[in-house]
Image: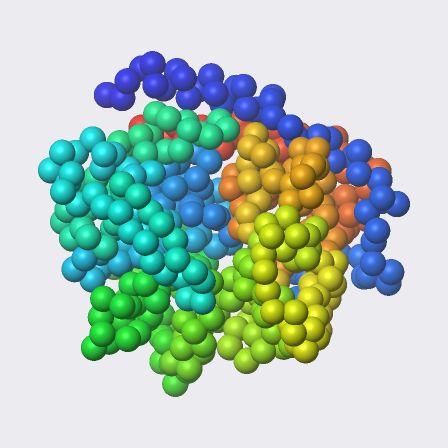
Length: 446
């Protein structure tokens, strides 16, 4: 039986969260302060499709479960995320596992296991295509561990905000197939498809270990997905997804989007598969120009940026970080102003994503590049991106984001600004409460 103190702690946390946090009554958002687009049809979102913005669970539900664990993927599915994200890296023996970093010191108990002391090392070199050297000291690289060795490790939740620490050492590092098993099982139980959006992390770095197969990582991702029922070629082969945990029951495949920060990776995927692709943008400066945006249409369907690039803009980032760049970038049309990126992308038929929307008990980092962070208000932050027409957002705390989306749908899209506030505040509180008890039930299950 699970520890009573743990159960009591989680239960009390639920009660506290249902009444606490920095959520405000959505009725405080007056329609004349939202800058509605002229002529927008009531009932339509300003997204490219006119449908509600898609919620993508960033590393699963990482607020309540350790990120990139079967628990975080399961909870994100239950909470109703349209997509659940795994980050993919490679082991020493060539297996895909789900982990955000290349190294293990942060996020696992590796430092406590003396049998792996000899694997700790220092590293200086390039880990990302087109970027300079980075230095990593006294850490353990996943690529130096076989899959069997990794299975010895346990995942540790970062002690940030209100993230429970009671789930530490409960989960191991899952393989990509563990992730697919979990998502398919939940699709079966929920009787609905769950979108999958794997990110290929540092493919250039990993592929250097396979000189005879220069696109080893990309090909392994595609072959794994194909085996699990997602055809990689547009030749009429039907999707054929099953749930192994449910006696091989047939399920509806979720929408698949492949994503990476590395341009050459996305270009290669565009050559070999018809599946949707997302180009992730941080400070790849040419891709933030008018010409760069136009080029993205040749190999991606989605253009996803760090959220501040739509708020303070890339030039503010350049100034704050002292980034040096070739001023001839003006020949690419110059940088797209922050408030024009979504409009320009939509005009080219690209959907726009943003990362990352954090839990309301954690710093949003909104406006911080200027040196003075904006006041914390998650509804105001999300309403800003909703109004801009963003098509998808990577979030942490799926239930919270869904309820703010519902608030916007009811009070703004459907035109009920005056009536919507109290009703939506009740929904927000209800989801706070239910989310925590979902966590409790998963704890009891595991």
